[in-house]
Image (cartoon, rainbow, N blue to C red; front, side, top):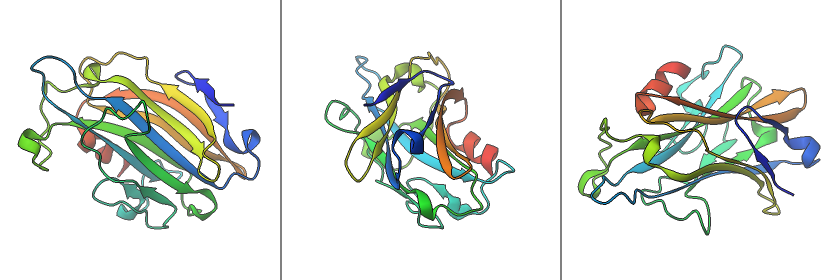
Length: 199
């Protein structure tokens, strides 16, 4: 049975699902429905950090420009520029093979950032008017890849009027287990501010 988390809540994956190896981390949202408002794209990323809270090498930052981590334990589904698939599935997904996560990695931070693609161009031009206050039904969930069972879900309830970068949640080691914390922490500066934070 899936557990709904609130900001700050924690969940031990192996206690809930003994023998868990392969998980999916899905993010979903609805597109901007404000009349005349800008169309936007959300990007899911993962920062695999060590005990110094920094990525040990560039390959441990998984995003649309690097879709497989250096240890091959984290893989991105790629960039979905549309949104609006939340009723039937996740908009973007990160797939994890937990036993293969490098011993250098103590935690994996899952983030979402918002940007605009004018005229369907792939050039990600950040604009100040875009923020998570425009995003509806935004969530992160973790499921067992092997049987599709959803283990937990965190629906974003916090209100962000200026923030365009979000640390959604993190997985961190607790002995031989992995635990998830719902973070819901917003920042201003889109993906660049998160890269500066973790590199």
